Length: 129
Image (cartoon, rainbow, N blue to C red; front, side, top):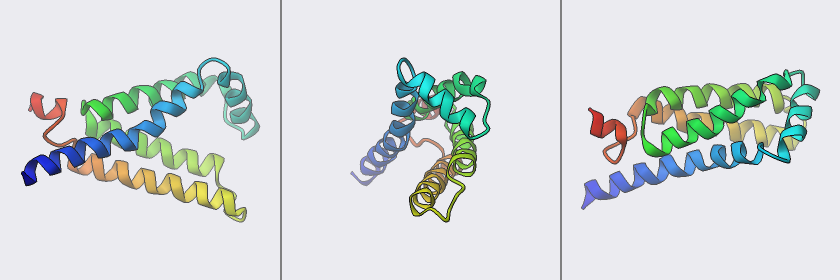
């Protein structure tokens, strides 16, 4: 019973940490695309990178949820999240930006934990091993 609880917890954790990225990526499609591109450019980030961001958010989220190439994907998402914190929430003198910065750092910490531990038994990675 304990093993089933651990497996369920690992799967639920992968889904919960990835849901934010899946929803963010989907939200950037369609009507959110131009606004996101303009915001990126206002922060000095080339808007041409937006398709890469969307692919990483949606693709990375789906891979982590499924537990496929989890360690590598979690590491990529951790790096992306830290980079996003620095680029878009670096003004830590603004309390809201400080909170957003720390939120990103915490999420990156979760991804690093996932990168070090792997996806767990209920994953494609475990079936392939």
